[in-house]
Each structure stands twice: as C-alpha cells, then as structure tokens.
Image (cartoon, rainbow, N blue to C red; front, side, top):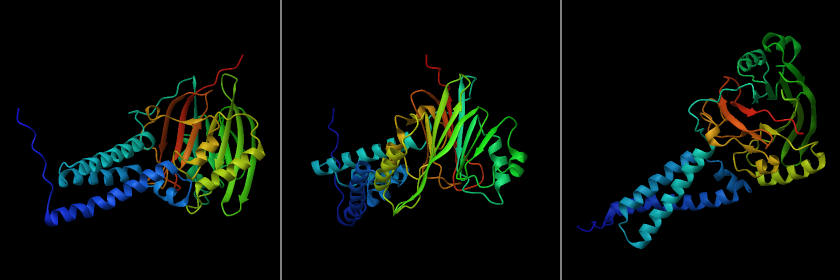
Length: 333
C-alpha cells in the first residue's frame, strides 16, 4: 500500500495570506478559551462570553480549515490544526447545548404536568391590550409577567384574560394562574450602587396534587458595562439578607446574562435549566425578532421534572417569551 502523500506547505504570497488569516483566529481562540473559563466574571471576559457560539464556530472552523490546507504536516502545524479543531468542537458543543433544543416537536402537556410561562413585555403602554391578547393563547397554567405595565388593570385584562385565571399584580411583576395562588410578594426591589436595579419576587401556587410550587421571579440589571461577576457578589448579599422562605422549585425571569453565568449559579439554589433533549426550537430570547442571546432563564428544582421547554415570539417587546412543561410535584408523606 502506497504511503499517504505528505501535504506541502504553501509558499510566497499564498503562505503570507494564510498566516494573516490564521494568526488572528488563533489569538481569538486563546481569548475565547480564557473567557469560557472566566465566564462573565469581568467586563472583558463577559464581552467575549456573550458572543454567540455559532459565530465562534464559523470563525474557528475557517481558521482550522486554512491551517490544515496551508501549513503542511510539521509538528507545529499539526498542533495548531488540532488546537483550532478542538475550539471549533467546543464552540459547536456550546451552541448545541444552550441555543437550540433537540426535541423535534414541543412537548404536549398532560394532566400530570404544569405549564409555566414567563415573558418580559417591557412595560407596554398603548400596546398593553395587544400584548395580553398575544399572551392569551399560550398562557399555560401559570404565567409570570415581568414589567406588565397596564396588562392586568381590570379594564384591560377583562378584554383578554382567559376565564378562570387568578391574578396578582405587584407592579414590577404580575402572575396569572389557573392554580390557586397561595402567596405572592416582593422580596427585594432596590438599586445597588454602580450596578443597577434588582428585584426578586416570591410566588407560591398550589399544584393539582395539592403540593405547593415555589417560584422565585427575578429581574437583573441590563447594563453591559457591569460585570456579572460583580453583580453575582451583590446578589449573594441580597439573597442572604432577604432569606428565601423555602427552596424554590422554579427560578425564572429576565436575568440579563447568558447560560453559564455567575449570576445564574448564584440564583440556581439547586435548580437547573432544561436539558437540550427536553427543549425544542430556537432558545435565544433577545433581541426579538432576530434573537441571538439567551438572557431570559427558567430553572427547575428536583421536585419538578422537565418534560419540555421552548421560547416563542409574541410579536411585541424585545424579548421572546419562554415556557416550561414540568411534572407536578408529589405530595410529600
């Protein structure tokens, strides 16, 4: 069997152009890997961490292809190709893990499930009724609305809210539920110096099994110049001060940070997002209609099991809505 011919490196202008392409890609790869380790701890790593993974996949795949085609087979060239291929695979894995669902069809809820919806319509004024009508068809069993504006004023909600829904409007957040609402209150609404405004709300609904479902609704500052590592430290102090009444079963809201953030780790309290094999469709939520960042989050605890998760465009706001299908908790004996 004849040996495989050795690839010969390019020379002259072709080699120079290849170097001009691969060198910046290699530098970007080093910075990107560092940012994946640091996550959004600092502003510089946050800016890189927020870049959509599919964009980095395209960049790294191009660099790996050029390096493989241009530099022959010496050990340094092979090492560079392997390194660029590795970050290409890493970026693809991050994209597949966080930005798209693997379920071909959205999960259909059964009588054993509870459907929880969250949306940030961003304080709709004249569009409050239109936003309500858009939400009505997908409202589920429990809907938590950040920044509802006038959506739940009686003169507006009477025009769109489905029959049998209970409502509590706390101003910055509202809940509409087919299930009995046992508790609904603001835990914290404050402006943190040099960070921004944070609010936390505590909601408890009674599932059909009779077991309570504890929901922690949150809203985090959006300023991109605020490092989420610093916000996570401030949030740690807030959570310690307010002392949650119980471990949350669901954490949801406009977190203004992407999957893997230090802020999400601080909020999680044992909860986790839907795995991709329990999600469907495009999962990024901001900025509608061409959402590229997944900054709205929904996490569930051990008492609930994920059956489905999706996001969808309601035609208003800069945020897509998100919806989870979860098994009802069992009554503890």
